Image (tube, helix red, strand yellow):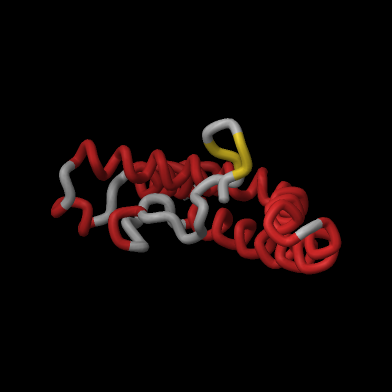
Length: 122
């Protein structure tokens, strides 16, 4: 078997594994499973892309609640922490979007998205 044939087989098997649902998915209603993986993949990509917005969101929310100085100190520290957590959660969700973990494709971070309903999500 030549190198080209082996590469073709590897690509075919990789694509098959990527699009086939795991065995545990047979217990879940098919449409809810596919909706779940689509939402988890979309949420993961959105979290990876928008994670740096936590450096704006957290100081703003802390500043609104506790004042400007708290927003510029505590808010920035919380923003860095939230950015790292959202980035890692997004990477994890993209890597495992085919698996219903956590249970029923629930989000790993709260809020699910940084910006929701026309404003910063609290």
